[in-house]
Image (cartoon, rainbow, N blue to C red; front, side, top):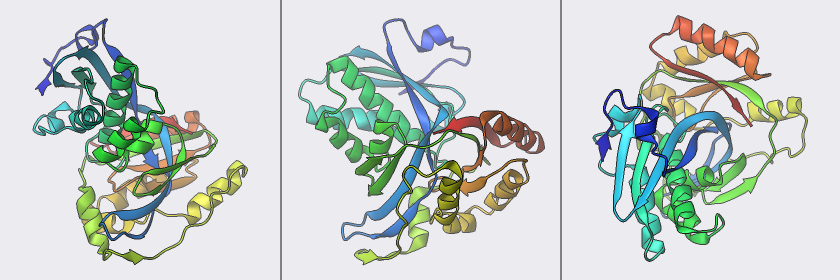
Length: 302
């Protein structure tokens, strides 16, 4: 695994013969922890949407497997010899004899360990690229198997559209969502997902909590009411471990037009929903101006 020179050009990062894929940020609009299975995995129910912002991954097909890093998040990943892109490629190679691999180039824009599925989205993009390079159908079950073997969020990221994610992440139900303007804010504090779940202290074999049925076809206002009633159960332990989340929430709630403010995934990224992308862009300027050291991004969800 290598990093690009500081002034590498896009042509250097994404050669003409390379295949390329977007790796959009995943946002958990809701996240209920309904228990913990006997195998140790937590039983989840989450409404997942994807943002218009994310990383970008390219593949130059070849015999060997390699990963080249660039972008603002490259430094945070350079010390990890088992990046999820490589892990996903190996998982698919175990399932597809003779799989052609190659050199991946990851342009890392999203913050790392941020609760918006950056690594999982990168892994899913790697699987899509390998499928294209090897003539594997998008619905081939070996892709889904490799995705789940790589990580619980990877199947949803492989699907890449709004859905209800249940179980440990293996059960996906497509849903239709309206388009929301959104602002994503990360205070540049990495969060360990394992630490957040450990703080929940749910014993294996325990079932608790219920979730309300998704209001399919509901108008936008009714959907927002449902979202407000379905929280992210990881937010409370995350606030204990990352107190700056209180400040992030206050900054987003103070912006004009904020309709919902919540943490995504295991944090520490928080998001706010707005009527449209114009209102979201104005809110992002306010937050970024007041907190120049935070990662702030206006985008679209839906």
